[in-house]
Image 1 (tube, rainbow, N blue to C red):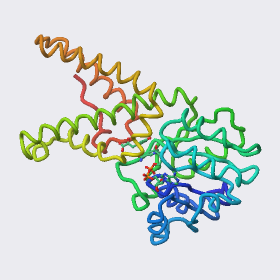
Image 2 (spheres, rainbow, N blue to C red; image 1 turned 180 degrees about the vertical axis):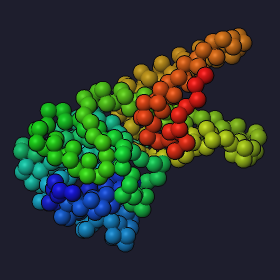
Image 3 (cartoon, helix red, strand yellow; image 1 turned 60 degrees about the horizontal axis):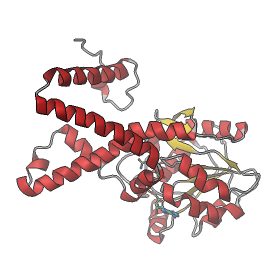
Image 4 (cartoon, rainbow, N blue to C red; image 1 turned 90 degrees about the vertical axis):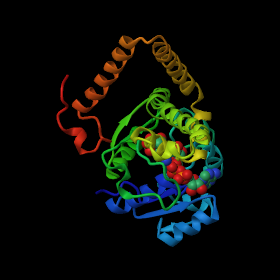
Length: 306
Ligand SMILES: NC(=O)C1=CN([C@@H]2O[C@H](COP(=O)(O)OP(=O)(O)OC[C@H]3O[C@@H](n4cnc5c(N)ncnc54)[C@H](O)[C@@H]3O)[C@@H](O)[C@H]2O)C=CC1
Ligand SMILES: O=C(O)C(=O)Cc1ccc(O)cc1
């Protein structure tokens, strides 16, 4: 695999940065990878487990002479990091990020971007509910999508970042920032909010039913608890910075929920059956189109019709 960049700097050493580091090493995508995290404890852990070729005690030191700098911090921390590193970035370097929201990151980063430095925002659509420097693994991005949001960035800098993410195992695509934020509000952000809410409801209920909610929880609820265990800082920032799109989708969700609530109250079985038939067809369409990259193998066997 070609080395697209001599030196890569990772700022924020959590799940995504640590997975990127192990993936870069697996594919030999850079000569040196430096890293920085705000907390001394995280930097210490990183040194202990060999995460990064060199762990630096400041972001400015980590990005010195770097050809690619990837901001792997929560979305709300991007501006402060950029303000610190902006003045010391190498001319011709590329800055990128992995934030779950794109418009807010562009607004946070652009004011601190020096002339002659490229900015190519990106979002790997891959993650887990784990966080921190010990949680990463090289395979996280394999066969997953990474969306690039060039927003006017130079074509060659963008093409290099595509090749870099492909080297990490991902399929890559491009999107406009606002479109990205709306799509992700539907596919990721609002579902996370629903999971948080459902687990909160069950927790309230648990006080009445003791441990039954957890003891007898079926797969659907277990998935909710996994998602609701995701990092609170990261998700707080997602909702604060993708406010409009999330509120738009949440509004639609609430309307649908009220419609289903009314059908249940009125005993309208036809409405419920039609609704569930439509949603089942969507799921089957995804599987038949071969786009269900998350499903276990049994999800790929031909789906029974009818
Ligand atoms: N967790 C996931 O599943 C995914 C997360 N993302 C995005 O990737 C980014 C990083 O997320 P994770 O790696 O999961 O988070 P994480 O919580 O595992 O790691 C974040 C790291 O950033 C550091 N940090 C926080 N504020 C900082 C600051 N001001 N300066 C320097 N370091 C700081 C933390 O100490 C930690 O090392 C977020 O923007 C998130 O939206 C993108 C795709 C998936
Ligand atoms: O763990 C899960 O189910 C996820 O949805 C992972 C994830 C979280 C945030 C992102 O911006 C992208 C992917």
